[in-house]
Length: 252
Ligand code: GLN
Image 1 (tube, rainbow, N blue to C red):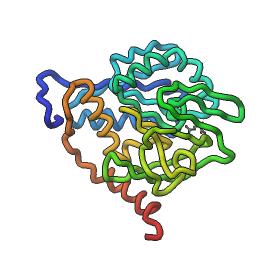
Image 2: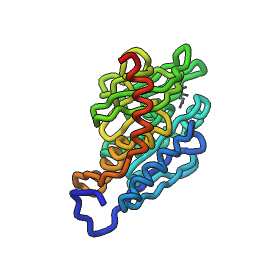
Image 3: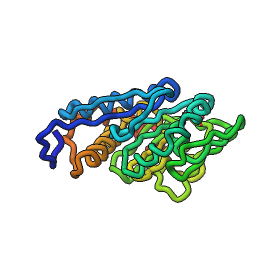
């Protein structure tokens, strides 16, 4: 169990996976499995609820929300639905609800995503916007976040360029393009919301980020500072380190 908490009752988190049929590029679902497993290994119960477009979402039940990546076409389909959940989703975010939004999902957190074939209205949960660029930014990526020492590694593939205005980025780009290929920053952090262009397997390769999300969710639900029991992350760290060495240490 996690340290620093005296739980008598069993503890549990519920993950809401929004529209997995439409927003699930590059196996973003693997991130859910990672969160579930890292909870279970510590004796923390974890459940995932998948929501389809026609489902009602009761945000008060949720501890972590995952919005995955999608093509422009799929984002356009989801966009109409988002208008109907916007106010509940916003209340959840302002109440420190944990959100991990990836690529297309990250873009949808913002005010809009302007594409060549039209404007996709976003949720407006975080003050950011995206504009389609001429070419796609496709490559491995390594970033350094202030959240922890280990670099975050992943893969990016996006046509959109995201501008986060006055918000804090998730990290500084060590290798790759990041938000827009110009500012040198990647992703966004707003309250307990993380938006990023790094695709699945984001969390399996970056267990510290996974634990960060779980800790924030437990703190919010159980109201105490949580230090999670360490797990044996030897293999995960080898995968992470391999990418850091291969790309970010080039020329050193
Ligand atoms: N459709 C968006 C873009 O190309 C996001 C793609 C994605 O989720 N990989 O910018």
